[in-house]
Image (cartoon, rainbow, N blue to C red; front, side, top):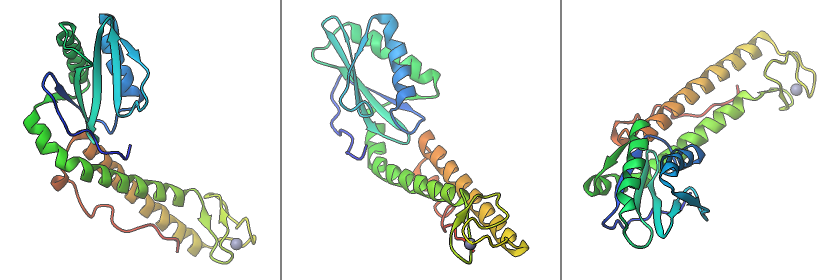
Length: 213
Ligand SMILES: [Zn+2]
């Protein structure tokens, strides 16, 4: 998903925004279920997070990813423009709208795209913070031998040191700090997916890292 979204936008294309991170399985199912009743059959895709396509007789339809956080899609014909496309686009639009999304214009796309790369980078940063904090919560580290033990352990797995009240207090502080970081990272990820503009998203909410005492 690191490749750049396609920048060119042709006529006969409708842009859709879904307040979600990326084009994944739930989004593919949503679009597919919307088209299936009208006789469209999905075709295998080399990169299903970037591009999907359907066939109905000789008509073809393609959905292309333009950006993430929120998910920006453009729908257009695959090959010649056919009468069936208008109905297909209406079905996709209805499905997206019913899931909190909306259509958007070329002008809005031009406004969104410069932010798309920065939004993706910010999301990666937040995901990394989240993963680091989760890792910290997986175990407590012994101050004497450095070995990791289960969070609920009373003794170190490595050297059998009994954790003291002070150790427990340190661990409690680590857990509290990690939880704060996780909450903040999740809030930013949710804001990014919903389409909140970057300048309105807190910048230092998740600064700092978790350290063992
Ligand atoms: Zn130890």
